[in-house]
Length: 156
Image 1 (cartoon, one colour):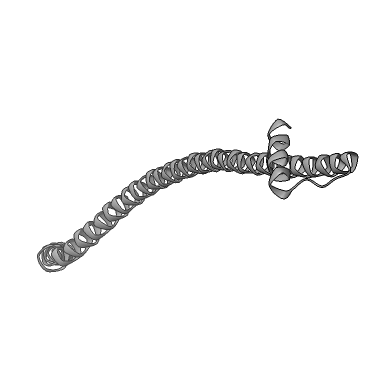
Image 2 (cartoon, rainbow, N blue to C red):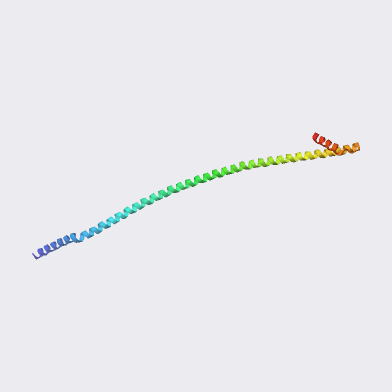
């Protein structure tokens, strides 16, 4: 019986140890394990959220970059159109200015030709009168000479 009593004592001690562990040791250990599992799950969820946020931010950045490129391209296109318009306007203005300068030059040339013709007529008339005086051998009075010069100038 001694052995049975020892075995029974050991069984009771083991049972009491298990009851003690279940009542006092296991609850804090289980609570620590559950808390640790919750922290790990929360960390994984936060990591998943961060990854999703990162993907969303990258997509937004990509969209914003595309929009910025499109806007820049549009601005460049508008600037090129404006440049072409400015060049065309400058060409038109330069052509008008050229025509104006040519017209002024032609008017000046025409006026100079008329002045030269008038001067040439006067000189020819004067030479004609001088020639006539020499042929006639006498001098014509100044009033008659002026009248003859005016008539010759008008005829030339």
